[in-house]
Amino acid sequence: MEMKLGMRLGMHQRLVMTPRLQQALKLLQMPTQELQQVLRQEILQNPLLEEVDEIEENLEDEAPVEEEAAGEKDEQATKDEKEDWDDYFETAFGMGGTQAEIEEREDFLERVPVAKPSFSEFIMSQLRLVTKDEKVLGIGEYIIGNLDDSGYLVCPLEDISRTCSATIEEVENVLKIIQTFEPSGIGARDLREGLLIQLEAKGLSDSMAAKIVAGYFEEFKQKKYLDISKKLKISIKEVQVQAGVIGNLSPKPGLDIVSEDPKYVIPDLIVERVGDKFVVYLNDRNVPRLRISQSYKSELQSNHEISDETRNFIQGRLKNAKWLIQTIEQRRRTMIKVMENIVEAQMNFFEKGAGYLKPLTLQQVAVKIGMHESTVSRVTTNKYVQTPRGVFELKYFFSSALSTESGEEVSAKSAKLRIKKIISKEDTKKPMSDQKIADLLRKDGLIIARRTVAKYREQLGILPARHRKEY
Image (cartoon, rainbow, N blue to C red; front, side, top):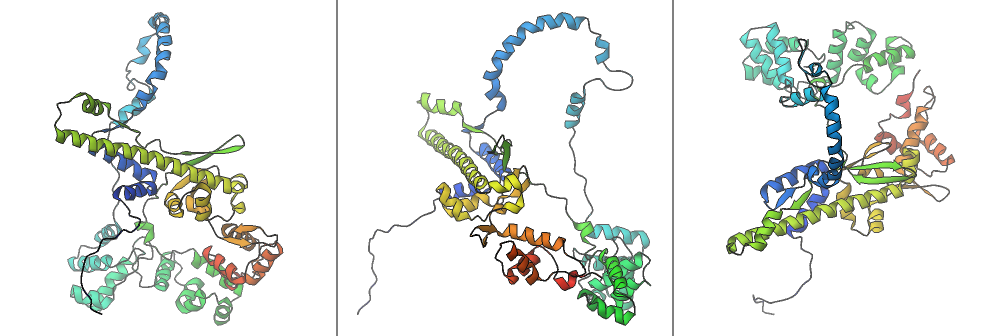
């Protein structure tokens, strides 16, 4: 059969993501704070968009009040004449004015954030205080530059020696100086050395804790306290006491310096209890309220001398402005609809607490509100809700299901809370195994396997039974 190249027309149906649809999905997924910045940028770029001022919205409501207040001004004026106005002027002890006026004056001053020194600058400043030797400073700067965020030296001394044209002994001497700096433990080459440095800084270099770290660190990590007690000829209880001393040391001392300021979460949605119901509304007070500029619209309708180019420009911007306003309103309705459905599905959580979370999937919510699962996923991604029980990420309310003997389903998060509660009440001298915990949960009606208990325990950051044992 002979093959030939050719062209053929045909009709096919396929889904195409238009630029506007892509932008609408991006706006739906945006957190409120990011949306606020995007809308302000749109206002700057599109002259037909303008922000609605809250004062303008309230002018009509306030007008009757102002008329009623006008008659009271004359009566108040005669009273004001009798007041001693000297009390309101500046005195020798300070500036006149109310506290609100003082705060308003302070707002005019720009609040400049305090610059914090970096981790390297903080350590280097300590080195400059103890020596002015250029060679020592050069070696020290190279060592400090090779400390990771945890404070550990990640470069071999041989490489530092070659780069700085110094002997191994000179590099080691500079490293020992750096290891005496704050925070205690920096400059160590591994966890064991870091703990020994911290013990020495506390004056415990000859203590039993230092002996355990120096000679039996592997056994200590595996919690083989019985082996350590036999080798050091001390009681297991004493080993556990020393383990508590070692446990109070910092495994990553550098994080005390490089840790960033806490990032505060601004909830996108708010759930409040009003009577017997929970009401959902958006936390969008800082999001600009948009409307079409009437001046451009009237100019387009009344002025017939506008050039075609200008008319097309205004019409294009008008179309974009209308679409954006409609998209933002659709986003608002979708978010509220999804959250209301979550509240309805997790009513026991809002009334009784986290232990009553029910299993819930994105698909269940999507079917209930008549939307696609991907839409619900975008609504719940990187968004937070403020509830009477705290601030939660929307994804928190979704989890897999576990079966019970009664036929009901329990959320995986609820199962984790039960496991955590059981372990918190166990006898620390005889900690329960994962199988024992699974058996206890089965007695309560929750069908769960031992390996599932082990998985949830690890996710909760709880050690196995043999490592939880205390003497």
